[in-house]
Structures are given as structure tokens and as C-alpha cells.
Image 1 (tube, protein in one colour):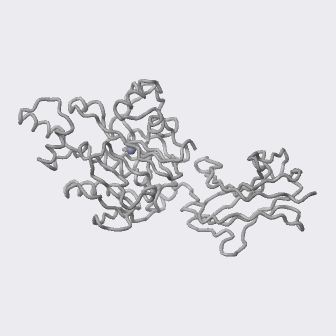
Image 2 (image 1 turned 60 degrees about the vertical axis):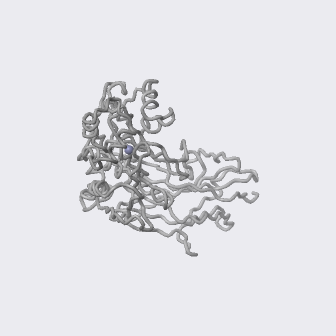
Image 3 (image 1 turned 90 degrees about the horizontal axis):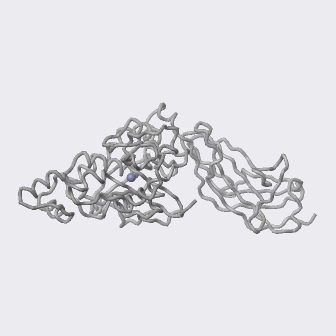
Length: 435
Ligand SMILES: [Zn+2]
């Protein structure tokens, strides 16, 4: 993992074409940072890419409210557009009064530069008085209308942001419906766990030249690191959910020919694509056909430690982790692996045919976990799972200290994704008895 913080991103519109006319620069996403260990990246304008570990539970009612601000007309438009997703997914946005407690998503209709949203359940990591989704009302305005007022009033260009804001306050509720749709639906797509479609593995042959970095610095104020993360980043194939790349997705950024090495372009998408609808239905299935597209997901929860003991009568190490394994609607094929590691961090190597996990001395068990089930592993005093490593497969450690590294990895044969690391913990330091 390159970073241990989260980037929340969003560019929202066609920067160049209208910017000149308005003498305004279209905003990108600011990048609020959270302390969470998850890493998530987001792009605008396409479908196909989601983080299966950040999605809500299918069928869940997500509690949403507005932060103070924003008139009822705009609020009602936002509510209606958020609910576009409900047509295709088993998920519900419940919009609550501003003073409602325990909300998952908090929408700010504000004036901070850019639109952005936390990705999926990361919204829950924000404090109750923080917004999780920001829409910059200026960039939802009907610019043509306001420009006509400037002309009427004899104001000469350039027309700066403050002028638009002044006129928006004086003549409220003239919104750009297309822009509203593209922006609000896109941001709520992030809130449901979708990432930017251009992150689709190998979809875009980016021209990683200075001109592109300069462009994003000029238009969005992003440094090179931000551009790498928000624009060039490719998402693990695992997150593509078996879907194909969809340049029509509402989660795709617009791309101009000079930004790619092969002249590839993507326009500004203003409606949900078929791919968007399919993906959201696969993440939040409503029926058996959609269920087939669900990607297996296993969560490790309530980890309470792992006991590692030398059992003299069996002459080997007995390893008993204590945790819960929770599956979604698909069979979860996981491996629980215990590897031996020297105290200095190097794995204990082996070239043997047995008890060998990638060249490391290890014991491992394959578990086929039934859908929609929580397995309590060695919880509440129950001993129902142990891993055994015979001493004869452990090289003579010469009394050196070592520890056991527990990992849980998921296989997803449907999507040909194997060995995805789900969980990782170390035991206390131990010594083998003298031989
Ligand atoms: Zn975005």
C-alpha cells in the first residue's frame, strides 16, 4: 500500500470548453484526508469499477441528511437524482431532517471548490458534524441564464465567480439540469462504493507527460502525486467485478486526445450507462439473475488474537486464531495461512514439498464458506478450528525466536482472481523447544 490515507476525489465537468466563457475554472475534487487504513481512489464518469470492501449491505437503508444550507428546490433535485440508483439496485437512501442523528451520508450544498464524496462505507468514518459528500452549487448553475442577465445589466466580461454567486443569490434556482444529473448521480455513485471508470485496469493509455501534470495543476491545483492517484491510478482487476470497461459510464472522467498516447477520447457522460446499471445491480442484487454476478466477499471481523503452542505429544505447533469470517451472497473460498517468520522479519524458508506456502514454512487450510453466513472461529471459548505444523517440517531454528504470521486470503475463481489478502496478523514471539 502506497499510502495509508484516503483520497476522495472528483472532477466534475468539462473544464476547458466553458471555463473561458465564464472566466472561471472548473473545480476538481479537493482531497480530504482520513486516517483510515483503507485506500480508495475515485474518478468521475464511467461504470465498471467498485471497491467490494466498501459497499453497503445489499438491501440496506442508508441514512442521509443535508448539512445546513441549500434551498428546498435544489435539495429536492438532489434527492430525486440520488434515488436514480434505487431503480437499479437493492439499496435505499432515506433522506432525514437536518437534525437527525446517526446518519451515514451528509450532503453539503456548499461553496468549497469542487464536488467530492467519500467512497461507500468510508462515509461512516467521518465525524457526525462533518459532511461526507460535497456539491459546489456554483458549478451546478445555469451559466447561460446568468450570463444573459449580465448582458442585460450591461456587465462586460470577464465574469468572475463572485459575480455568478451574487446573481445566484439574487435570482435563485436556475440550475443546469444536465450538469446536476451528471454530478449528483456521479457523487452518489461514489457514495455507493463506485470508483472512477478510467481506473479500469489497462483501459486508458495515459500520456504521462509533463503537459498532463501541468494541466491538472493548472485546472485543479493538484501536485504530481495527486495526479498519479486521481487520474493515472489503475484499479486492481479484482474491483472490476467481471465487467468490461465502459467509456459511457457516469463514473468516467472526460478524456481528451492529447492526454493519451493513442488519441483515445471520452466525452462528458450525462446519463447512467447500461454498464452502470449492471454493476450497481451486481453489487446490490435485487433478484437471482443479478445475484449470479455478485463477487465473493469475505470479511474478517472480531479478531481477538491467535494462540500458538508447541504440543509435545503431537510434536508440532498448534495455531488457533480467534475471529469471525463473514460471507456475502456467494461461496467464499478462503485460505487461512500460518507462516513462520524469524524475529528479524525474514520468513523461514523451505524448499520442501509439504508445509510450503510460496517457499515459506507454513500450515494452511482451505475453507469453503457457505453464502450469507458468519463463522465464529474459536470464539467464546469454543475450539472449532486449529492449524497444525509438524515439527519435522520446521528447520532447526537453533533456539532463535520466531513468530507466526496469520493471513486470510480469498480466491475468486469466477473472476480468476486468486490469493487476495484479506487479513494479516502476527503472533507473539516464540521459541521452539531444544531438540
Ligand atoms: Zn468522482
